[in-house]
Every structure is written in structure tokens, then in C-alpha cells.
Length: 343
Image (tube, rainbow, N blue to C red; front, side):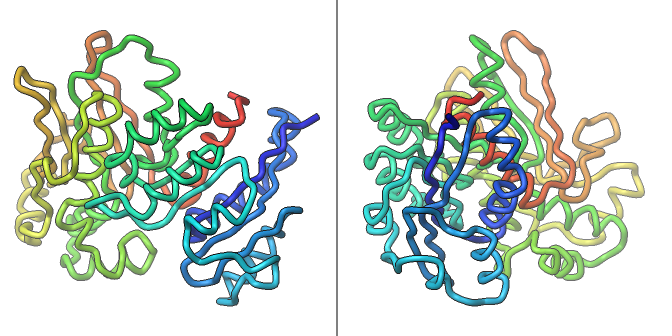
């Protein structure tokens, strides 16, 4: 008999909708190859209401309703709009959380994940905030409850960063990393190299859904800083919050700066880094000029890359080409299979 998992979603934005489509498309494969069947029993959204249905919600219809701007009330029983109350109003095996990040506190996502674990659910998130602000709390709680707290998609979409260390690099110690972890700024700088103004490049990034209406979290380096903090907290086993990352965004770069660098065969990149020193972790986010010999030179558009240095592997680089919601959703699907014990 397949292992059936009852799923609860908090958030039904681009990533969660991509995950729903992925679950529908790969349902037969998950059951045949991994012995996992899923049933979605609850949806909580910011704009389309909240519903529960113990027998299973129609995900295809949910996607159709959201796409047409309608509420979800036709899918099942109305549910509380408060996330904690929502989790107590249903019986589920896994929470899939993908609401917007709170750089400063990780809330309310952190509270939702904690409540889910306390209710006996596995907790899976694409949200960086709870990883930074609640990693040890949630990991310890999951261990006590015999459940998993998983977050593969929190830093580099679907690229297997955290699982790489957890599952394939035993006893390796991370001494430093350096990379490009923010797609918005990398896309803007790439388009400015082609002659677009900052305003034109930002408008394009917003038009394709990469940049938010308020892009300050990306432009000022906060998104990159919270990703650095997450990598340091988990992979270097040193709690670090974004405000302790030395941070400078790309807001000070002008088109002339970018074009002048290009004429000299160099590129401006918003570089994320951390290094273990004798006095602790030195973590930074700042624009750097890189030349053709630098592995980050060829990382253009919305692509990302990170190079890890360890005590046993001198250099290991992971590059992800032009990710989107689908790749982030894949990271959550992989975590779902891990939670089910299928991997």
C-alpha cells in the first residue's frame, strides 16, 4: 500500500501553485517509484480565503479559481484565516509553507512551522526567515516529535545545497563560501551591461515577476544577507542573523560604472561570502568587480552560483541556471519525499 500523506498549504503564491502543478503531474510517478500518494486537505491563502476538506481538495480546481481571482470557498469547508487556528482545524501529515519572508523575525512563518511540528506534522518551507531565526528551535522540536523540518528551497531554489551537506558530505567542515545568491540584482546588472538604465532593468525584472513592486529587499542586499545568514547558521553551525552580515547593495552603482567595467573586461556582481576566522564568522554582501578568471564572471541573468571551500574538498561549485517558481517547487517536492522516508 502507498504511504498516503495529507498535505496542508499555507500560502498559494507562485511557488505553491507551481508545487501543486508538480504534484498533479508527478502523482503517478511518486506512487509507482516511491510509494507515496498525496492528498491535499487544507489551503490557506492571503487573498483567496482558506478551506479544509478531509477527503481531499481538488487542486486543479483550486488553481483555476486562483487564476481567475475567485475565492476557494467552493472547494470545501471554510477554515480560519489565522495560520495557527487553521493548523488546529485540520488533520494533516505535512505542512508546506511558502509565504513572503520576514527578514527581521521570520514571523509569522516561524510560528506556523512550530505549530505544525507540535501538531505532529512534518514542516517544509521555502522561507528563509524561519531558517535564520528558528533553525535550532525547529530542528530540535522536529527531533523530539519524530518529524522533519526541511527547507531545501530557502536559499537557492531547487538546487540541492542543504541536502548535499546533510546526505553526501559526512564529516566535511565548511570553512568558507562565496557566490551570487540574488537573482534580481544579477539580472539588473546583466541588463545594465547591455546598455539599459537601472530603471529600465528593474522594470523588466518586475515585468517577469523576478522583482517585487518594492524591490528594496533585493537592491539593498537584505535578501542576499538573509541567505548568507541561513547558510552560516545551518552549514557552519553558527547562529547568524541578517543584521550581523556586513551589507552593501547595488543602489550605489551607476550605469557608467557598469559600462566602464565591461569595457575593461570586468563585471560588477553582488557577491555573498562568509569565512571562518580565528575570531568567528566574517559574513558579507557587497558589490565586487570580477574578471574572466573568476567563476562568478559567467553567472548572468537570473542564474545563481556558490563555491564552497571545506577541509576535505578545496573547492566545490554549484551553479543554477535561470531558476523560477518551478525549480523552487521542485526543492519542496524533494523535501516531501525525504519527509516520507522515500529518499
